[in-house]
Structures are given as structure tokens and as C-alpha cells.
Image (cartoon, rainbow, N blue to C red; front, side, top):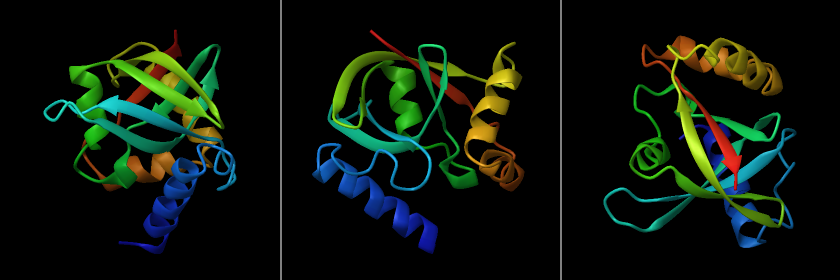
Length: 140
């Protein structure tokens, strides 16, 4: 695992362990905890993800660092879009919507998340032929 990957795992663990007291802005961009339900196990899975805002929606990107494999949490969302997000210490139920490149709003939302994350998503997309979706999460 790369140094960046290791740092991200430590950041996520700290965010979880402190229940959001530490971690929301630790890596220079805002991060949320996304809780999904495992599509096979039914277990709650938690992932720390950089987010941007679009109105009331929280936008995250299923980049998996530019891997050819989509992140497991994306498969969980396809099976059950009802999620929980945690921003700092605040937890909220929400519904996720996967936005693929064929969606008319994709290009605009991609620009928002990419600019917010210092153009990292463009770099990740160049590493894979897998179209990387944006996910809009709407709090209930």
C-alpha cells in the first residue's frame, strides 16, 4: 500500500475512533463518514470520503484511487441506497444516487468535485478505463 493509502487509513480510523471529534478536516479537505449496508453480509460498513457540496447534497466520488475495481461501498449503494452520513459529530440518514457519465448533470458535478479535491479525480480517471461515478447523497 502507498504512503498516501496508509495515511488515509489512519485518518479514517481516527475519525471513526473519536466519533468525529477529529477527522472532518484533517487532510486539508472536508471528509465525511459514509455508512452503507453490505449487500451480501447486511453488516454496516463505514468509509471516510472527501466530499463537496452541491446545494443540499453531499458529493463523493467512487474513484478507489484510480483502481480498475470500483470501491465496495459503491456496490453496497447499488443494492441499498439508504445510508447514513456523519460530518464531524453529526449523523444523518440520507439517500444516495449514483451519477454515471451518461447522466446530463455528470460533467458539471465532476468539475465541482474535481476542483474541490485539487484535480485528483482527473488524475485517477486517467489511471483506469473504468468510468468513475459521482455519488450525490441527499440527507433525509
